Image (cartoon, rainbow, N blue to C red):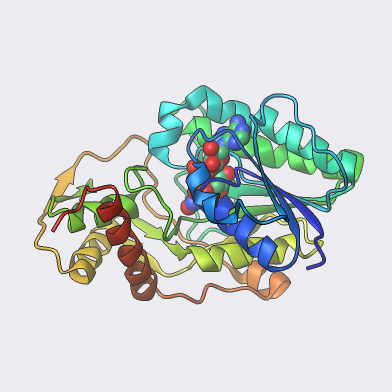
Length: 320
Ligand code: NAD
């Protein structure tokens, strides 16, 4: 990749902070823009002293100005965890619409490549399995999850309109559930919740009967996939995810085993419109980007558990 100067919106979040790191390692100058709604300057603390790194506190839904040249805009700003976007429904719709408009405007002004971090949630509760990029999805437009799903669907549409109308060099990546170090232990997503519960000796709360599936991708793999799309001229949309499918109950059991926890499993109500299955068809990523996920679930979970253990000790949630 020949990126010299990149903007990462949502760069102080989980995925954004890794992208800032990797772009710096590849010799780019990085401007990280974030309003810290769900991210934290702590995620990029280790980058702050570098001359090639700048952290700008800014809300993408307002006026956006970046002086100088930019070759790449990676647009990740948006709450991503269901607990976060249900707590911030209007902010989520605003950043998906106005925020994406402003990020696209920046890319157009600078003649930069633009990559939208979209999501497997555009497929909703899918009636096609596994999901290919040609599947249009099954989303309830007035359901509780719609604030996120429809914001991302709108963002994909806007991105496509900029490409077709203004000739902006755009790419859309549909990211499937990603996990790894730097997730917030209380962000409400299944993996941080299970790991925290297992390490703290609390019951693991599995929703429904636990037979619903997800495909979970280790963060290093997802980041390589996003950068592969950024470094290409492929418009996508392209699925980036690990096609190994696991039920929520098996995931909870695996976390218990890997942490050596004595925690029991407790079944709780399943949220409205929770997808029954989720698995990417990654043929397109393999053929167009030469990318596939490489880190297995056990290895990825081991690395994540080690980080969570240290993090929970730091915050004194875990003692002894
Ligand atoms: P995150 O919540 O850790 O990061 C999102 C970042 O965006 C945060 O730092 C937040 O403060 C920032 N942000 C939110 N609204 C903003 C605004 N108006 N202006 C500026 N910054 C704003 O979430 P994440 O897991 O790192 O997800 C990053 C992106 O990837 C999101 O767009 C998400 O939809 C997408 N994605 C993530 C996953 C996943 O499994 N992590 C899956 C699919 C898609």
